[in-house]
Length: 471
Ligand code: SAH
Image 1 (cartoon, helix red, strand yellow):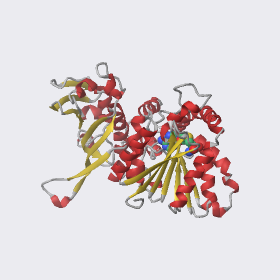
Image 2 (cartoon, rainbow, N blue to C red; image 1 turned 135 degrees about the vertical axis):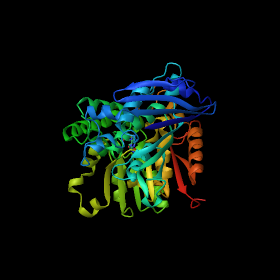
Image 3 (spheres, rainbow, N blue to C red; image 1 turned 180 degrees about the vertical axis):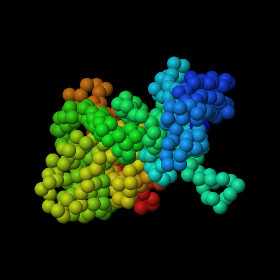
Image 4 (cartoon, rainbow, N blue to C red; image 1 turned 90 degrees about the vertical axis):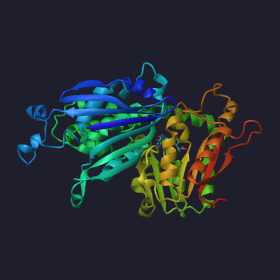
């Protein structure tokens, strides 16, 4: 069983520091059912690759009854894919060999451990129970480029076709700890081997390793159920906890923050102006299907529905609490069926590619990007501009220069306690131009709210039009 991790960077051999393994040595780590070797087949200034080779002890596995049982009888206890196919044994080896890196710590290279790096992971034999498409479905939403190569079942007999395993390559800009956590959870999920006893502490492990990504993953139910070996009670409890994590995160700060932000901006009823500006853009571009992504409590969704030209309206938010409020505000239960049929309220995250956002005329994100961590913004860009790719994208965000005009806002403070950043006009323009350029859109920026000759209006609005349409 083999995993290789490749880092391309300024001082690529720093990978050794991150993994706490010296690139010039071979390391051996004892495992419950075998041994792991860590070595570096390549270690130059530009490229560094670490290999984790796991040798399982099949006899030991049989003694512990952890080998496959199945219908094929005693032989399969000794002759099986366990030594070769990536499975929970690989996950265990990762946690043992790279535990510190998995936890995101590094004594010597703390800043690097926190940074998104150009990383590549390869697993030459990945089992994909449920079809190879599943591997793509699980890794794509996490922002990776995914390659799954087939291999012949037996090179000597091409007529036998390809084997059930795939060579997996993941490429992306991620923190090493994230990449390892994704592998530790998703490799056993793809293997879906049920022979392993799972106790309550597996929920804690899953939640710890899934922190920050599992709660928003479109396949979180499948992942949780398989990780917990299809034990319904455990799965239900884990999913409840994930739900809490998701609501806690953006929301706790949100509700109080929303009130502060609203009172700050009320004088100019900025929210109303913003929504009107967005509706105008959609009318100009004759949009008929639209998603309000990060819809919050659904104020704009209501206005979108009021416009009969919009035959399909999606309100999407990562926070179930916000969606519940939207549900109430829109009075979904007593909505006339024709209006109801045009609307979907869905839970989902802009960090992940989401098929439900594909094929639309327009996607709008009103006051959302500033709630995303700056280093996660590339995932937002990928899911919106590369995957969903609507004809028109509208993004609004605060103009931080205007903050000095809010009398009640402390100098240097941001408008909302959940805001991760607020941009100047130049910063937003530079970002919009870069993203538009990278994805074949044309960006136009305008300001919303009372203009101020010195610091500009309070809100900035970018319209991105795909292709040459806006030229
Ligand atoms: N568009 C609304 C809400 C803005 S507040 C308005 O203008 O009033 C930001 C919203 O973005 C919150 O509802 C928050 O839950 C949501 N959000 C934060 N991160 C998100 C993500 N990754 N994907 C989707 N929505 C997200």
